[in-house]
Length: 278
Ligand code: SAM
Image 1 (tube, rainbow, N blue to C red):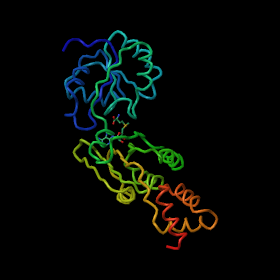
Image 2 (spheres, protein in one colour; image 1 turned 30 degrees about the vertical axis):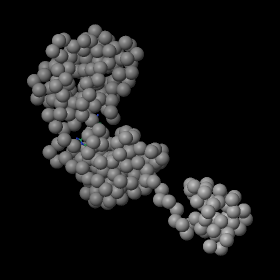
Image 3 (cartoon, protein in one colour; image 1 turned 90 degrees about the vertical axis):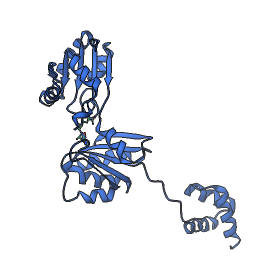
Image 4 (cartoon, rainbow, N blue to C red; image 1 turned 135 degrees about the vertical axis):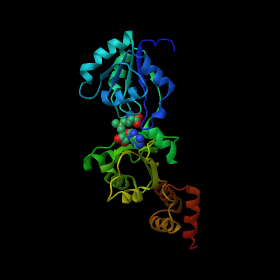
């Protein structure tokens, strides 16, 4: 491979199975002049496994502000890679400010895509993927968590969360409370030896782990809002009967149709029949 051009390479690494690293990721990690990583011990093991000796520098939440200018200056003249402990950098991982500031400084920022737990779980959950919202980790405290879930309740999309084992049951119960009993799935230890994907309604998933928190890393996928069932004919009749006490047939039909989200013509026909005693 020809020498890498100067720039900041955002390199995805495996979320468990080392076989998932891409040929390009290996070439970029081997060809970079420096690898910025969350934890040099974690990335060191990965590099050692693949026989790569590129120098590493730590870049994490506690030193990011101090490290950013130097990494950006280096990426203007040399190839620099950014990796996280696992998966795609910036996805619930450090790197967002680094990428933004590097781009503003004129650095060539290059994606080297690959594994991400959110996409891996979505790809096997069997829930709608045409629209999804990645919500990352919910707040740990119950009140803040409920508020965050309430904000998402009306979003017409599949929702994707990251979670840790000890909090899984409480989070699933809070999702059930806030979103209703939607179809959902929990992906655990994906691509690893004990990987599993369990699906079912949120209530059943919450009950399953209520007394025995699972070990390992988890993704929760929740299907989009459930369509409201159509109102029962008896409910429509009773709303019409009430409306007809004070309104003309046409107005009563419009009032009930608007309130119940129904077509005016069919409600009008029913209002007329009720008025005529049928
Ligand atoms: N950047 C990573 C990515 O692209 O997936 C995510 C980093 S985030 C700090 C770590 C969280 O991702 C874990 O707590 C877990 O929720 C999820 N995760 C990572 N690896 C996983 C795996 N193999 N199976 C299930 N979830 C995983």
